[in-house]
Image (cartoon, rainbow, N blue to C red; front, side):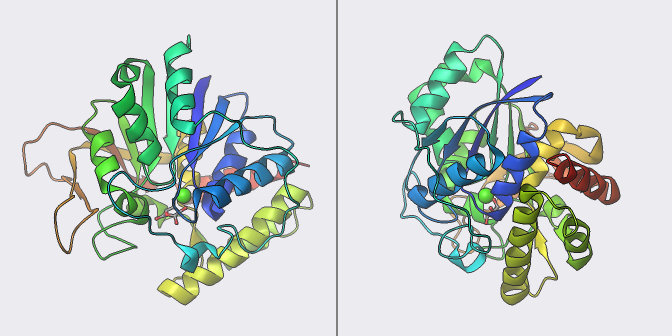
Length: 308
Ligand code: BDR
Ligand code: CA
């Protein structure tokens, strides 16, 4: 059993990631969900997390976190996720509210007081995680692993940088230099799990509310990817993190050194992945390079059916 905190900015693929984790409670104990400014403003991301939990009828506390990156103004991604951050499906207003405690304090308290090591699962900008490590560096010892979506050897927000890392590269630098085991699902692997029409057709006949919600997410997200990037379907980036936690055997991983670029004019926010070990720098991350696509989608459909 892994004890996890999902740190996210839902977000179509963040929402799907929560759903995968929620369906796998025999393997994952979700201690809390923390939100961060990213895809849209932190208030909206928090509202979206609460809505998803209500749909799942899942009693997990939600904590609102940082509204902006460590050193620069926030950039949001309404081009991809719409104004609400989760456009497409319409969910009722949540009846529950976020807890009063700040996300960063929740992360610190949970990690400090837990008898079991905690795995952090960030799928948005790394601001909350960096803040927690800066405020209370001793928590490092009780963090089992940080399993994150971000980066890659190409970009989607600039030619060099992926959105989550670009939005708060300084925070990413704190995380990647922390010495904590970091497992990275970047664009190299997430662009291998694109929810094409074929996938949507497999989701469509699953009659439960969760699957129908996912179907609407995928239709909207896919249209945005088509319009914005000319790609036939949305890569369900963040879903790789929970899928890895429950099915690590699906992924090919490589230990590498990753340096975060925080100064480059054209390359700010780049994850410089030393795949061929050209620098001699010590490995500080495990980087996902491949996924068994058929098995991934089989498991995805299996999970959605489990809500019947
Ligand atoms: C990442 O950015 C967001 O738009 C997605 O939710 C994902 O976390 C992909 O670059
Ligand atoms: Ca995200």
